[in-house]
Length: 305
Image (cartoon, rainbow, N blue to C red):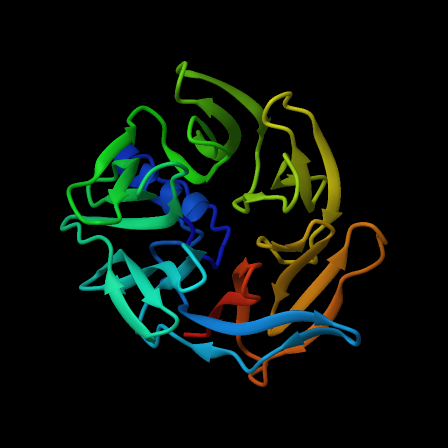
């Protein structure tokens, strides 16, 4: 689960339940409960690569909703899932691109869902539920309706990525950090790949490897990892202040920095290049999702309080 604007507040509070709440908000949600959070909206654009570089259509706001609208995930070329605020909590919304209509996938009194993602081989979506009592667990939500199913009970998962129906890649909150873990649900085994990682997990296109981010020596790196062997390699360094990225192709990364969209070619190993700028200089582009078959880019745009 991934609300976006990290404040990096360092507050010492000795009551354990309050300290845990602050830890969840600052590390997992990326916000401080005492500072509020920026408004965020989900935008869609056509996004393709042409002879002159990347081409981006005028972004369209598809959420238009006060509060937190974030964490887009393409269920298909016509269905976008995202976490959407309603009645003081977040539920999983399902937006039809063809009908331009929003419906709800979850409705959980006393809890909020984040980070929706299709479960391979199942007609269901996984999401992280944060209950009002601080309990945080990974659930499955049937796409055709029905009660959610608890998937993992004993780990406080922040972000997750399905590598296969049996193998889950996830970041797990341990003390004041997140560790990257590989979990085999079939044989109930797990191992830690790296401690102190970030929140951006992706399958690398046309590859058996995944990518993740990690803070090393003051930089946020994009690294690749083979879930079978656990081997890792450094691919790129994100621009200053950036925590999120997504893949355009197997060699092209894109990210948002302030009001700009930027790209990086891991083959050329040059610099990040700006290819689109929002007219409003005060917005901040954070999370991105790209659906390759139809060439549609979803982006989360934060506006100042």
